[in-house]
Length: 198
Image (cartoon, rainbow, N blue to C red; front, side, top):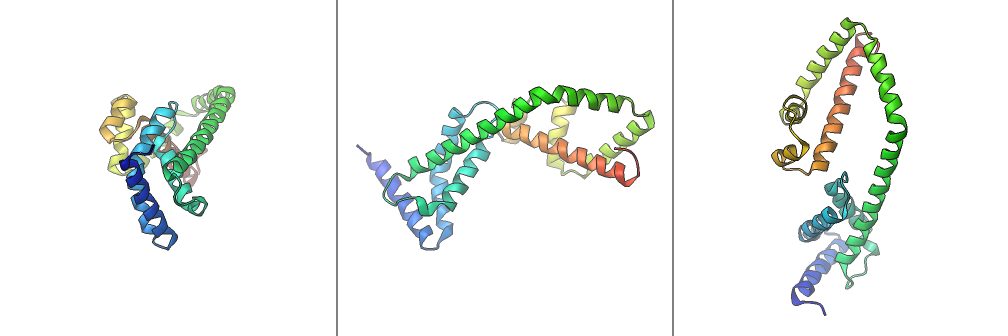
């Protein structure tokens, strides 16, 4: 039997969804506010390490919004949203497994090849690359430079970085990955611009 609170919550959700159907798209914010916490909590329990729970939750809400016409008013919207989240979680876990499998097979060889290439570079070229890296680091916003400093200068564990930044460990890993890629692209672009081999 449905509790009075659950019944009230469903009524609030259905009312907001009805308003969205009528063209008031801003009413979907009510849905997000009411279900964001429970959805993230559920995902945090269900998701294996390495999954960015915030990203999966966001994708789930976007999918629910874009497919709102598929939802039948009066049924259980929360269950419908969680089914969408379950699908996105399975998809993300499958994607991560493929990435891990790829890296397990090819990364050691690629890494070895890149290390050999870098070690064969003349010292002047390595110095140029480091100078460009310093310039690229200086172009990052201050709050992004903190991530680099914490991880590679102070060697702070990811868990502590997550606490300091108010993010999940998975979100911190993703941020570091994006920063490394951005810095790499910046350095390579500067090397190319100077006519140096990258």
